[in-house]
Amino acid sequence: MNHKKLAIFIVVLFFAGITAVWPQPVNIIFDTDMESDVDDVGALAMLHGLADAGDADILATMVSSLNPWSVPTVDAVNTYCGRPDIPIGAVKTLGVYRNSKYARIIADEFPQDAGLGETAENATHLYRRILASQPDSSVVIVTVGYLTNLSYLLSSTPDDISPLSGMDLVRRKVRHLVCMGGRYPFQQNPGRWGNFKPDPAAIVHIARDWPTNIIFTGGGDFADLFPTGSLMFDFALKSNPVSRAYSVFLQGRNRKYHHSADLIAVYIAVRGWQNFFELHSRGYNHIFGDGTHMWRLQPDDPRHHYVDNIKKGIDPDDITRIFDDLMVAPIKKAQ
Image (cartoon, rainbow, N blue to C red; front, side, top):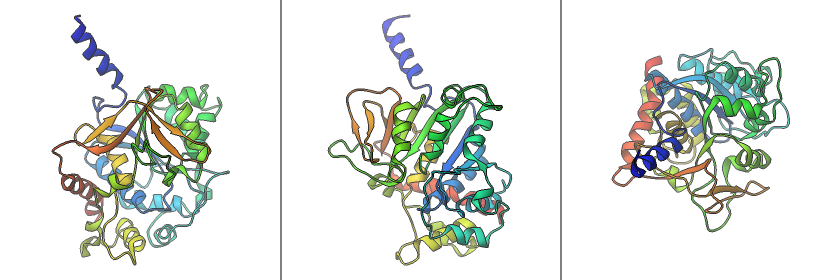
């Protein structure tokens, strides 16, 4: 093998854990807080749209919030989208509680049999059970909430589910992690935003110790490029939990769309970044003790990557339409 071919081969191997060369559908575990922002609802609906398209197999949905209506809201969306039996795990102790504008409304108004969050399976237990049952290097985890559940998973010890520690179970079973949180590249001054703030110890733990590749995606101006959700206000689409959540959350904001921070993460987790986005791999995500973060160029951490822009020549409106269509598809199918 000549030097040029060897270099190409090495590059292919390096990115093998984060490219879309794997068999479809992608085995996905979705982890969400499902309370503070409504794009969690849109992202879960999009994931169902991707599953309906044959691109994803939703293994489980995890809830990282102690809000008791977050779990039933997840169940209501899963049920409406035709997958009422997707396992739901939830953080049980020492988690984050935040109020929600929409969660109790969705839990009360739409069919779900999860009750309150206290009845859900412990997320650490469910993570271990699902991962242990899957082939090696076959699961993609996408987190659009707090990192609490993932931190507990890493710290878990061998049990009757698996003789492996949480660290070894992740190393063996997880292909890579897609993590929505922060702003990128943000190299000048540290910033403290979104999902990293409520449980800073968890993101410090994950950034430092997570054994597979991590693709970080953020919010802010990047997520604002794709104003999704306007289709939810179509008169024919209003009797469903996704449209209802968007309507409640956006009430008083004088607009019928929202940013797509969580949707970007889900799309990349299932279909990859290659078609639309730029992936940056030099440096690492430095997390301070209070959840503040900044991307530093040295030292380089080969596990850390981020997406913060679209490729040259790509129209963001085209991405917005794809996101909206995927989010609406399972709703139309259910009607």
